[in-house]
Structure formats: C-alpha cells, structure tokens
Image (tube, one colour):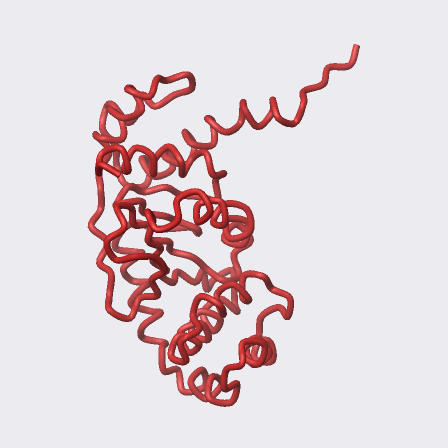
Length: 233
C-alpha cells in the first residue's frame, strides 16, 4: 500500500516545526527561560506570545556605516549576520527574504552584518569587503543581491564583473578591495558576532530575539507578527 502526502499538507506540518527549531537553536546558543523551553507544536497564539515575551533579547549595536534597508522608525528591525559564500544564506535570500519584504514592507528594517566563516569559506571575507567597497559607491544592497545570486561566482574577476553590471567604477572597487579598506569593518562585525555567541550563518536578531538558520517565512511571521502586535502597528 502506497502512502502519499500532498505538498501543501507537508508544508503545513513542517512550518510549525521549523519555527520551533529556529528558536530552539537560539535558546541553546544564548540561554533560555522555562517558558521558552516549552515551545512546541499545537500551541495557541497566547502561549506563543507568552514564550516570546520571556525570551532573552539582545541589544545589537547598529553602526553608522552598517548597510540598512527600510525606514529608521520601522517597528521591527532584523539584524542578519551572514556569509556571502554560505548556501543557507543564499537560501534565505532567495526564498524567505523577498516574502518578508513583500508582506511587511516599511514595517521592517533590515540591517546586514558580516560573519565570514573563513575556515570553510575561503572567498567569504573578500566578498564581504567587496560589498563594503560597493557601499562606498552607494550600491551595497544591489551588490549584495548579485553576490548571493552568484551568476559570476566569487573571486576578483567576479567582483569587478558585478561592479560593471551595476555601473560602478570597477577599478575603484578593486583598488578598495586590494587596499583592504574595509577589512577592519568586516572584522568588527565578526568580533561582535562572536561576542554575541553567533557560530553559524545565517543568524538573525529580530528586535533582539535570536533565530538561527534559513527557516521558512512562517517562522519569521510568528516573531514579526508578535512584535507588531505589541508595537501597536
């Protein structure tokens, strides 16, 4: 006898589990409260709200030179620590990030911070610096999208190619990269991540609530909706 599950039913079952796993990873890395430990399937909205209220929040400093997308007064701020060579970061960029932007618009502000996993991703550090050099020319987010899109791969020629695609001064970008102009900036992000206990990418802090991993939109919706409900939006 063959047993089949429709795709829509499958995702209906998996989505709540994804939320639990995403938050659970945050609990294990950064500590938890008794209420947070009880997060589980089938919980009511009230239970979820109680548990999110009890979760420890982290004050993530946003520097003047951090790439920011969205209004400064948005009720929800998502800080992402990411690596341009990380396949899970690519998955989030392709599958989840666009849905957050589409659904929440100006209610969410995005902040990008670098966490290149140098031991396993040899191109990640240079890619992060190249993106910072693109920010110098006013095109960080567009360059960010091309790096994650990966049509040219990573490496010196690719960084120049992405600059050309955006109409940037490719020679200036490569000079910036060769000089290591933003090496210290990338390192500051890296050290902050380590101070916070970040050990993998992508890691998010949604109004200070930690979520680890490239989980589906439903996991982000749970936290964002809770935050919006408590902000009066």
